[in-house]
Image (tube, protein in one colour):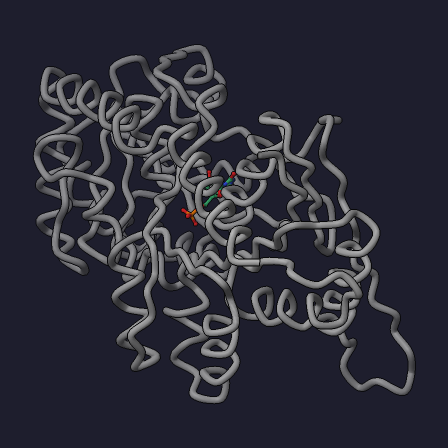
Amino acid sequence: MKKAIGILCYPSVGGSGVVATELGMKLADRGHDVHFITSSIPFRLTEYRPNITVHLVEVNQYSVFKYPPYDITLASKVAEVIDLFDLDIIHAHYAVPHAVCAELGRNMAKKKGVGVVTTLHGTDITVIGQDLEMQPAIRYGIESSDAVTAVSESLALETNITLNGQYAIEVIPNSIDESMYYPMRDERLKRHYGIEPDEIVVIHISNFRPVKRIDDTIAAFAIASKDRAMRLLLVGDGPEMGQTRRRAKELGIYDKIIFAGKQEHVAQLLAISDIHLLLSEKEAFGLVVLEAMAVGVPSVVSSAGGLPEVIQDGKTGFIVPTYDVKTAADRIGKLADDAALREELAEEGIRDTRRRFDSNQVVRAYELLYERVCAQY
Ligand code: U5P
């Protein structure tokens, strides 16, 4: 049955925002009435789509407040949207602040019987969850939700360990927009970046935060590219960028690196790449790994968090122990030297994307969950 769904998410670049936005768009395509309640228009929502309304949360900067009350304003907005649009369900992406705001908002609303589903994406547990001051809020967000999902088994387990709880957390993996990420090669962009046709392109895409271990990426690339014609394509920007440039100069590989900065269309950059690299210290899922797999680029990933649930070692890519730069370099070299192996892993990766991460299956899993939750009221 068609539902009126409120989605609370962070609209900025990053796995959770992308996943929440694409889920909302798919739900709208299937006839649901979707309401994003957020601080700005989600960055992947670039064109008009029927059945989607964005409600912006505008925080007034009254001089009486030392801190602008974003969370309270969001909760008020949730209440307003529930009553104005007769919402059936709120889907909060992140326990803090969104699940807490969803709970507050539904209590403030005149309409009763609105369900709350919360999806955990990682940072709320792996980063915020470590902060003891925040744990009561995270617990409250989880416990007051009618259903909680996590994007990987590893995150579900870590949530219960961190919060010392026994929460029933359903795992619904991430998916990607198949109309953007599909098997493609496009050599033209290589010329733009001055990449020679025989050079192997290793790509890394992230927000350049310390948890991504860019130092390890650079070090592994330095070893692997010593006697090989290789380039490193770095996509994204963030706090580690300065250190990355310094390290690259120290290692003498600065000229082999292309700093592409923050990009909105990473599929085109994946299309000129041969190997994808993600050696994070923590990673709840690793959406970029799925994106690379869908385009047909095999990944070398660390064994952190949910990454081993996305990549099958030796079948769709390679998994190396976290912090193990030498093994990472070895796997990069192995892939660089063997086009047939790259092809084999890429093909299996494309098949696996369709088998386990099909977006229709994922959206259907959320729809079934919404139906179950709504049936309780
Ligand atoms: N991303 C971009 N542009 C960038 C860097 C990252 O679109 O410059 C996107 C990735 O493609 C991915 C998300 O969809 O942000 C990061 O997800 P995750 O790897 O943090 O889960």
